[in-house]
Amino acid sequence: MVRESRIGLLCRSATRKGLGATPRDYCFPLQQDAEKYLKAFLVSLQIEFPKTHDLEELLELLAPVRPDVAAMPEGIEVLNPFGVKIRYPGDFPELLPGQEQIVFDLADRTGEAIMAQLQQHLAGG
Image 1 (tube, rainbow, N blue to C red):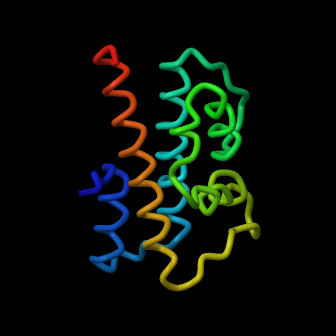
Image 2 (cartoon, rainbow, N blue to C red):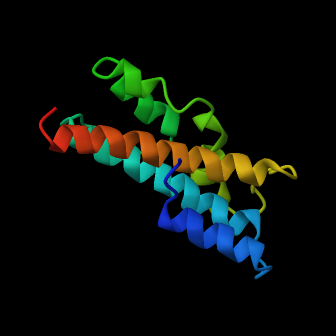
């Protein structure tokens, strides 16, 4: 079962309760959630990374050291536009009906995959 982040839980709950949550309200925090997990893993491996919000760029830095982790989660590029473009008025990336679930799932899968690796790393494996 996928472990859902606190951010994901809050966003999904607000959406279900009809609290006026829009893609703008939850896509940016979900992208940030995935980004922070990736950056934490890079730090744990002592891999330096540039100032970026690009999830694919962060995964590329993992490829030489951890190709198994760099290959997941598939489809993470869907989250990328919400890390930067959302910050500027009028440039909100389009999210088609039904794609909300994809955004939630990608953020959750990223967090789950990276936490499994971090726990293994912290346990000395």
